[in-house]
Amino acid sequence: MLIPSRRLFMLGASAASVAASMPAFAQTPAPGAAKPRMRLILLGTRGGPGISPRRHAPAQVIVIDDVPYLVDCGNGTAYQYVAAGLRLNQLRYIFVTHHHSDHVADYGNMMLLAWAAGLKTPIDSYGPPPLEKMTRLYFEMNAVDIDTRIDDEGRPDLRKLVHAHEITGDGGPVMQDERVKVTSARVPHPEIKDAFAYRFDGPDRSIVISGDTAPSYAVVALAKGADVLVHEVLHGERVRNTPPPTSNAATILKHVLAAHTSNEVVGEIAAKAGVKKLVLSHFVPDDPSITDEMWLAPIRKQFSGEIVLGKDLMEI
Ligand SMILES: [Zn+2]
Ligand SMILES: [Zn+2]
Picture 1 (tube, protein in one colour):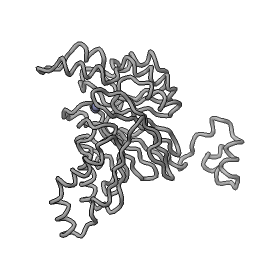
Picture 2 (spheres, rainbow, N blue to C red):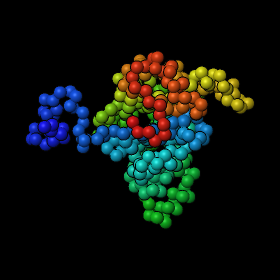
Picture 3 (cartoon, rainbow, N blue to C red):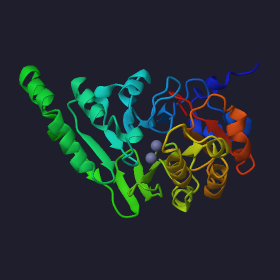
Picture 4 (cartoon, rainbow, N blue to C red):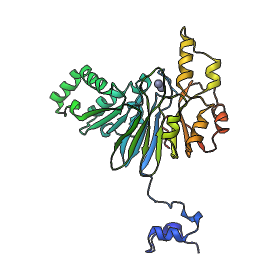
């Protein structure tokens, strides 16, 4: 009679010794096995400041043991954060890649709404200058609400809960706690002066978020051997052939092609870094007539690992 694999773990021997004595195919986690400690949730996967019902502005959160490490917070991030089943009042860390509005429009709003939802604990935010000034001015702009709620509702002073930390130079170590070590790398995203990618080395996995970047060896170096690389992507052929219908189309096209990474090279970056899984996000353009296969075909020629076309609220 076959013994259910779960039963084997209840016979007295430690799980490790039982697993070691079993053939490889039997080491698949049994029902009820420990869940991974790190979750990666894509909150918004659209690139650029436009509004779309299909995709929200760029944001993703790594949740480790229920502690959220939010990376970027474009317009709508608070909404998506709640839609993902996360509790705003437990917001803890925010990492900003750069100060284009599609990545920071909800930076202050995330903190104010978290506080309105009952936040009583500190928030540490990290990002390029002028993050400290932006934080201070946001609170100044919302002083009426903050002061009124402190008086009327007995809330702690939000301004004293938030600590903004600026990242300069070429990046390097950002922070470390008992769950994760976070490292940054400066990436090229002209004409933005300061842009950073982040790497999270946690208990289960290493996850890298490229932010917005032109094809960059800095990303290759930061993502070396990582389990997951979340990389921005634009559809090279479509962008070159259909300039935006605006009077400043030529300028926008020049910026887009110089500052971002196309699906013609992102696979090479993932391959050079040797990552296990490439997750595409920050899609430009957000055009449903571009099929999955049209995004993937050039990437597959360069990268043989797993490729995920990111979608809002996808958990990886
Ligand atoms: Zn962007
Ligand atoms: Zn940008």
